[in-house]
Every structure is written in C-alpha cells, then in structure tokens.
Length: 261
Image 1 (cartoon, rainbow, N blue to C red):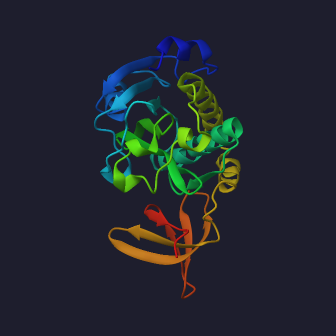
Image 2: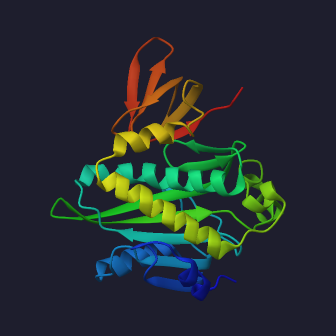
C-alpha cells in the first residue's frame, strides 16, 4: 500500500505533488487528471493510484498496471506555444532516467520518444496529453507508469520478454513513496530548466541515455516501415534518420525498434 501521508512527509518539491488525489483503484490517472484540470485544478496536482484498470500508453495501447507499480499523472500548465508541448517528454524522461541511475546504479536507456529501458527492457512509459483552447495551450497532463515492485511472472506472457521491473533488476523491493518523491523532485527541476528555455542543454543530456543513436533502426509510422541509421534527435525533438540510399528524413512520431538482427 502507498501511504499518502508518507508522500507528503518526504516531498521536496515547490509545486509538484503539493495537491494529491490518491486512489487504491482507478480506471486511469490521466483520465481523472484531465477532468480535474478542466475543472480548475492547479498546476502540480498529482493523481496516483495503486492499480489502474484502464491504463493506457501511446497509440491507445493498454498499460498493465497492477499493484506494486507507480502509476501517476501530473497536471502542468506551462506558458509555451502549443507545438512545444511535445517537447515536455524530454525533460520528464531525462529526470526519470537520471533518478533510476543515480538511486539504483542501473544501466538505464531512453528510447525515443518516451520509453525508459533497463538492459533493453521497458521499465517505464510516459504519456503526455495536451488540451488547447482557441489554439492556445491550456494544460498538459503527464502520465507516468513505472514498473517497481512487480514480479515479472505477473505480466501477460506476451510482455515478459520486453518488460522489466525494478524488483526484477534489483532482486528486492523498493520504497514506493521515497522513489516517487525523488522522481517528482527531479521532474520539477528539469521542468523549470525547460521553462527557462534550456531545452538544448536538456536534449544534450537526454542524448547521453539514447543508446539507439548511431545504430541501424526500424521505425513504423502510419503502417509503413522505414529502415536506416538513427543519426540524431534535433532541437525540435524529431528523430533524424539517414536511409540506406543516403536520403535523410526527420520523424515527429513512430514506433522505434533497434538491437535487432
């Protein structure tokens, strides 16, 4: 069980998590967070659930969210242009990767655009959802799903080869409240840097976790498969791919695969 009181006692943030909505079971933390934001919830509001019954990732894929993980969403209200909202994934994923590496000394990677991997297996996913009004950004809900104290055998069979958990990697349980507080602290720090127009610096540090750069990759977008070398991620967060014929294309979105034979 996650203790709301323990979270409140260990928080080091100025904004994030200062208002907490805690549930033992919830359909989706992102869904509730969006509803709260539409009704005036303040920036930094945190929605957290012990278990999600309808958790989702990118492309509307179901996100396995049993007891033992950290399933939470944060409401952000950055004063940025609408098209810049997609860049928020970078400071968030950087904060998570740095926290895991610093806290547990694990081999962490970031997979473009929004996955955190340990030893080539997915341990965390990030889903950002923006709401605009009259072409202006009203708010962004950032959903984070981190596999923590879950046995790998609990996962659906089709996910066991591609997923991992902190418990699986460390061979021990982790204190959820303390990890959450550290994550929120690091996310707030990177978010502040992002708002101060330090995206290029954030991106350079982000790239230090991006082991796919320079590798042969496949990317699936709109049902079409592309193959080439991942040359870079540009200052807009787009993946730069050089095809085998020498042409170059920038991808805004897509399903990235690498480390294949």
